[in-house]
Length: 103
Image: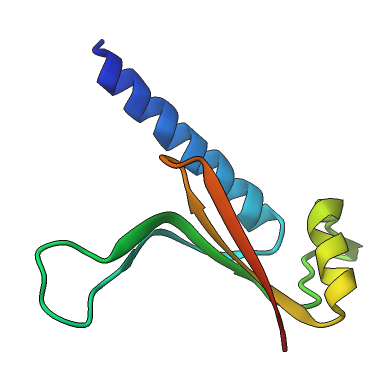
């Protein structure tokens, strides 16, 4: 197997893990998000491997049991007292940007 193929497989696995982590912690996720330019151009303006939003007081229940989210994410929610959390994840640049906004 070629080195590039192995690297691509590792990249896809990292994207899958990130996607599942955020999904299981209450995020609505969109994989492969592309921002198109206002004018017709050959290439998109930018893209991200994962775009996600977690709305305030997001909770999931199985029957009568509430699922527990990662405390790192719920701490952000508790500080905001009703804030949404937006994230943009890019595997190639190994960057995660998150933004909390007041609702």
